Image 1 (cartoon, rainbow, N blue to C red):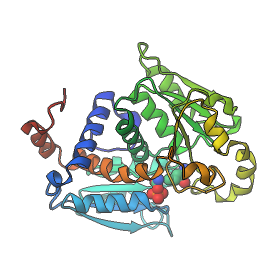
Image 2 (image 1 turned 180 degrees about the horizontal axis):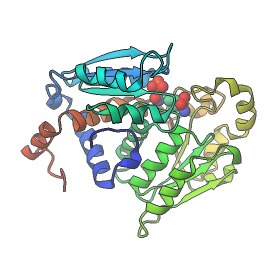
Image 3 (image 1 turned 60 degrees about the vertical axis):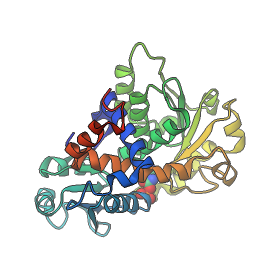
Image 4 (image 1 turned 90 degrees about the vertical axis):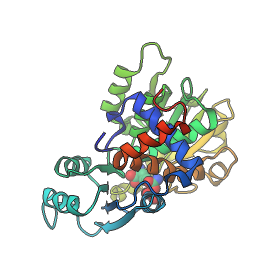
Length: 321
Ligand code: CP
Ligand code: NVA
């Protein structure tokens, strides 16, 4: 694995390893304190960020490395100079590039041109680091995700697509509850239907109706207006109004389901205060886990030999089993 652009590039074994290493990193942070000494990452961001920026910066530092933030919010990548020239400069100084871009193609191209690993820190199409943290958060709750059902309510956006990939990798069923006009990317749905193992009970379902929530173990929502769509705010708020997650919507699962949101939340728009602040809400655990899973990811990409050596020492018996 050179880059981390999309969860669709992973196989279930690699996925399990990432989740296991994440647990080890979270439970024994001191064991990994020196693993990235002398390494540095650059964070190239065309969009705002609280969680992604801070958890990558802090994560690099906690592993003994360094991180530099490069603000591209005023100009687009490829604007002042070509994207390939940017990549060929960055690879001379840094061991890793974390990019947050508008077009998904930009992050793909960065990875093509740069010889060092590129991590997708969110593009218009996918948010793989988020879905990795979300799956890890659920593994902490249940141990095993197979057989569970995740329902995503609202806009079939970048976060929704990466969650479809995560569900496929984990053997979870996925219910997308969105307006007809804002369904998730058909390619992610096709992949789910094509690759979900015939032996597993995992199914993909789309519906416009909140009645699709019955039986869901998790209710997940995200903003109705993603970064870059601000001009459409008025129209989007109108379209998605019926998809607000309220206590009644949560109760309609018929279970004591968890509530999840990648944040930032627009309180009392896509979710009410009473839901996001309820005991069922995992939102701050998700945010905390961004740090742990991304540290694991950085180790996979930047210190694979050290990671191998660590686990062969027998501190994690199940490694690669
Ligand atoms: N969830 C998430 O990616 O948050 P930021 O936009 O603050 O990085
Ligand atoms: N869908 C949102 C996620 C923010 C973390 C966006 O792209 O703005």
